[in-house]
Length: 226
Image 1 (tube, rainbow, N blue to C red):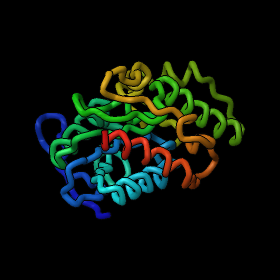
Image 2: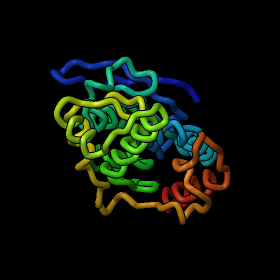
Image 3: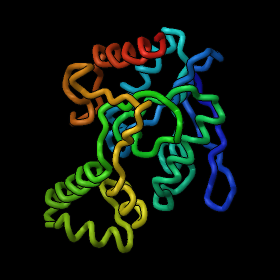
């Protein structure tokens, strides 16, 4: 496992350098991982890396890129739109020669075209927005303030807004709310029931679930062997 730099396009034709976590031994099957988004990314990070570790043990390469504005990225999240995430994933797929994709939760909303693969626990963009709004309202209430979800959304779509610590532009909020999981025939949905256990993204803190890791890695390993 190592961190590798890949070139990520910027608006206007420039490019930035972003990091990717890779298990790369130049093997036949190479899985691009589109990570969960926002707080779910934090709760699912260890799960994601452990799935990659299992794939490595099964002879499968995998790549987990930082999205623009996230993790170690030097881009400002407040300037990022969903299309920038899609372009980043597309650039990583091209740079590393990905053959398949594993999308996790909201990562499936910004996938590059054409790569076959799997989408674990698909979620609508509107659902992610509602979760962020709920977190902000709860935080405000604990601080003695009352905020209204509809008013926050209206303001956010006009001038941008910070939700649960994430600064989102008006365009990001508008686009994200409208995004839906892909219905492509070459992208296989994998729901939580298929791997068992309770959803990690719903837990209060990041947690481990080795059985779930094994189950999801097995889905990919069997699929790639066919």
